[in-house]
Length: 190
Image 1 (cartoon, rainbow, N blue to C red):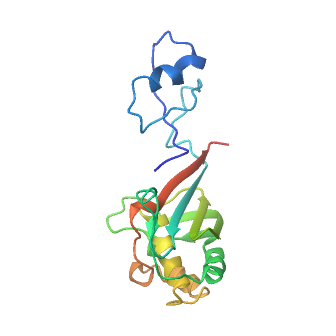
Image 2 (cartoon, rainbow, N blue to C red):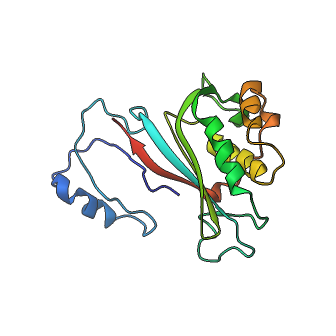
């Protein structure tokens, strides 16, 4: 799911920019909504001009889960130690080689990324993992979430995350959690 998705395209349309979102929404499926449109410089690219992204991974940590949100969160019924997860998240902050947190076959030339903010919090039996960074490798957020899940299960200690990062060894990190819990929250082009 994506709340903060941005797209760009060239057009020769005569539709005024302030009416563009309404015009496009009239042609889209109900599962997609355009919230705004603006003119940008010709050099702007919605993917390559990004300076910062924020992703959120949601874990439903209740006993039974939910029918309504089951496709927007990962249900995990075993109680997690959220305080340990909060402690562990801080080790992801900073610039690191995230080789241990990328899927095999990732085509990126470099595994070095900078995470500006890594937070975990709990609200009404949901655990949220939110990461803001300058870029993310394929499946990186889902693997970080899986690693923090292991911290919450007390399979690994929060401070061991530092060693996992330094190892650059994918087998030492947690499993890749399902995509259902992942959501792009915001994209910044500062």
